[in-house]
Image (tube, rainbow, N blue to C red; front, top):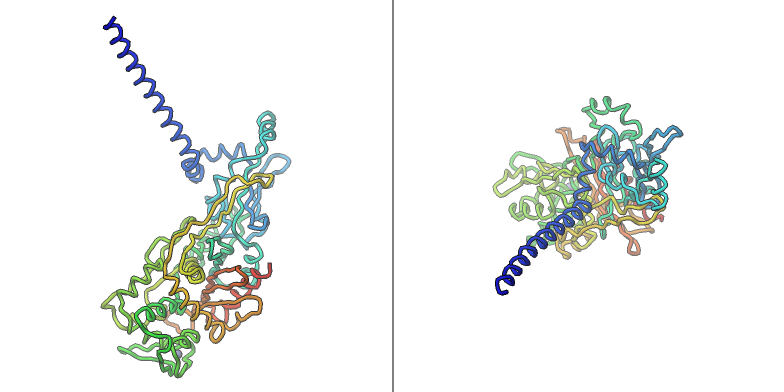
Length: 475
Ligand SMILES: [Zn+2]
């Protein structure tokens, strides 16, 4: 009797081990399956080299790409014989932002690929489709893009090469993302060879996220902040007669303009290179370097966008004074992407906090019902709220009393910094920059604009920014 009980006990134990073993295995499989559906499947389907993707498109008509206000930016038209054609009603205007879906993928067509190849149509409709062999309608990706503002930027930009980025500072939503030269996303297959052989203008390069430019005078934002953080004052005075020579190298103000006697705020608002090269020589270069890295130079930018380039800042203690002077006015070896400059402007508006830029706002089904929302993540502070306040004061002076006075408006309050960045030894050949933001009644938007080889910031980039602010605050 006693023995039997022992046997039963050990049988029970074996049974329990097997049961729990299978249960554990089952739970592990469930967890893996849930993980795959949530995260893994997205990478799996988004991988452009994955042959299984074609299987998804056999069952689902690729969903649309929409602007934040419901404008159709990309759609799939199905002919009577079942042939599908991807079309882009806004064409070149949103080319780099929306991207393309043949000969590889880019833009939202890449980042939203998974969502557009899945269907959350009405269940009964899908059941009927299963029986009749018809395809399901894929979900649509609703972007953060403001179609009106994008169009305004495109119209104001003209035929220059360059880029434009607009971000909502409190959320990180990308409202405008434009790069020129552009292409017609609908005919990319037909023009593929020509687009790729054109190495000179590199049409397919998204300059907003991958273009590396000298920041020019927009970098005075960082130089001014470091200068003030080292205990110096905005009331410190400078004298400018248009040029400044040190160590055998001469710094010129734009057009050799003599700015005369001025304080730091005036030197910033008029963009005086003489004052800022002198301010640069007074800096602790290691602290200057740290400030630049805190502001995301030499770092991967925190964003959900694919293929974003890193900006670079090399200056360190012991550097040649000539390089110090050049760097302080945004020349030298410093390189920056327009997206990065827009993020800096957004952070200054947002009390120093960077919200990670993103372009896919939500996924909806063919009836417009929400399938999945996305939100901006907080990266954190890149400068203190006090620093942001100091910079807002300087950047407001640029509009009220300086090189961006064309942004004075009764409809909103604008802030910013212009730049004319030299990119060859020819001092007259400059990229035209504007970096800044505008606000009204709690609505805020930050922008970065660069037109390659166009001239001064005030002559070309400021008018583009103006058209964007006007479009944004008009609705
Ligand atoms: Zn000057």
